[in-house]
Length: 177
Ligand SMILES: O=P(O)(O)OC[C@H]1O[C@H](OP(=O)(O)OP(=O)(O)O)[C@H](O)[C@@H]1O
Ligand SMILES: Nc1ncnc2[nH]cnc12
Image 1 (cartoon, rainbow, N blue to C red):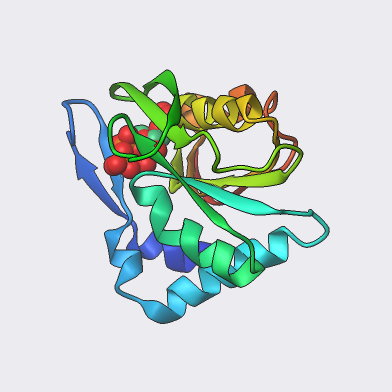
Image 2 (cartoon, rainbow, N blue to C red):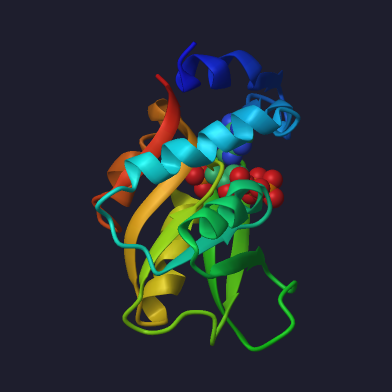
């Protein structure tokens, strides 16, 4: 089985979560398979070959699962981007819309060294609102979004079109039309 087939066989559809009309992609079964988790990180590293990354920034909460693992494997710092009110030091904030609501994310103002090349990681690309907001935070801190990575991309919500303005390197391991 390819990694794509393995991932598609374990990701669960949860109907009407967290709101009616949403088909929620539940990635928690992936986390129960340590071999698959290793393969996922291997695959990201393979797809990032030739792309220079200084830091990995990932988005609360599901972006954290693989964000830390990718940063460890690349041997670069990890930067948490969190929902409003969770980070203890001075922050900068950005509001955004997502498939099922609105939110504000924040990052510590000293989290990223200006001029660095950053990989933004999240579990899923839907409308692109969340990662678009994360990219604005990275850019406000004077760094460059070198690549963005996801486990899952929902093609029908056209997030990729929105993200093309943020980075030319968009990696997703599985896509749903
Ligand atoms: O592309 P978008 O339309 O912005 O949607 C994608 C975002 O939505 C989900 O996060 P959610 O806000 O549900 O938070 P969670 O990871 O804490 O569950 C998902 O983990 C992405 O971060
Ligand atoms: N359909 C979906 N499943 C899981 N996470 C999401 N984030 C935004 N849309 C989502």
